[in-house]
Image (cartoon, one colour):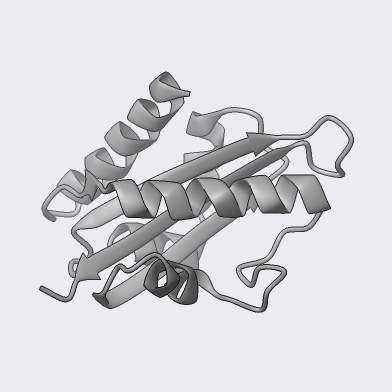
Amino acid sequence: MYATINTLLILTNTARHNAGLAAVECHPILMNSAQKHAEEMAQHNYVDHIDLHGWASGDRLKAQGYEYRFAGENISAGINEPIAMMNGWMSSTGHRANILKPEFTVTGFGYAYCENSSYKHYWVQVFASPLF
C-alpha cells in the first residue's frame, strides 16, 4: 500500500509542479478519512462522495477534528492501478481542478479492494488547506 500511496503522491505533485504549483504533503487525518471512505464504498458496493451517513468529505474531516478553509475529494472505482487512475482524474475537469487547486496544501489517499463488489477497486483522494 505504501508504494501505491507514494506513486499517487508523486503523480499529484508532478502535475502540480508542471502547473507551477507548490507540492502537497500527506496528512494523517486526510489519509485516515480517505482510507475509511474507500473501504466503506468497497464493502457496501457504491461509489459516491456522500457516505452512508450522508456526510461529504468535509463533514468527515470535521468529525475527525480537522479544521480547514477549503476541502475537496476525488473518487474513482474500477481501475486497478494508480497511474491509470491518476490519468483518468487528470482527464476529468472536476478532478483535475482539485489536483491543481493552488489553495490545497495537504492530501490523503485511500484504496480498497473487494472481490465481490461491482468495481473491485476503490480510490479516494482528499485535499485540504488547514484553517490555521
